[in-house]
Image (cartoon, rainbow, N blue to C red; front, side, top):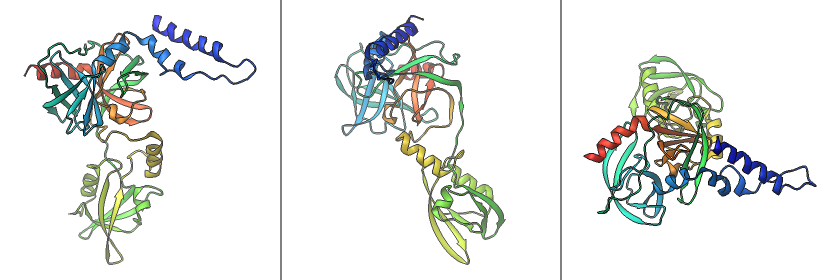
Length: 330
């Protein structure tokens, strides 16, 4: 309640103190907005804990992921598919260390690194014992420069995220020894934009012969939205090859493409997780792998996927805490 009161007070003071009384418009200075520095101060000491237990992971001087320091010996947990080749960890106090890989968990898309050092006094996260039962809660994470945080709320019940592959945007028809006929092409979907037509017969997908609808669905479904697949079709006794950039299963490729342009880059892997916490922190995909905190400064999860500009998935601490502690002991 005290935190909510402080934020409410900051907002009201900033509006009354900085508005132009001769104008119908109110301009709120940046520092007083949700992720402004003044507002962030209301989240101390959770802010300090977030900054000191988060590391930047780089490869060739380029930020590729964030990580959570999970032990006094400098073990760092991060997003596996983003941190391949990570060599350097930078801490919020400016210290720079070399890294070595310890373990990878492909199912959860997690990797455990360790700072190369004899120290055993690194600040580390304290795991929350109970975090996934609340529908709505304040959460925060360190931003990429490790000098400020981003604040938001959880926006959905914790849930399983199944695998969702890409789609061409066609309805498959008759099967034959020649292949699978396209009975309809969805307007403005990926296949339509690539030039596929009703009546085309799909003979090969990614170089593999197909004669059944299920074969086409399986081969295409292994790809993600935005991936490019090679399709060879038979059209009027002529074989033609098409390169198709797959769309999202739930929307046409045109809508998916506009959303991607507006949102900025998203995580390559953002599905097939046993459980996630969904929140709305404005973080780039390079911030994935970093820890997520509650207002008490406890780590409630690891940011695992940027889905779009208002959706981040985090693996909750309850499914990674014990696994991480066991890996650190090995």
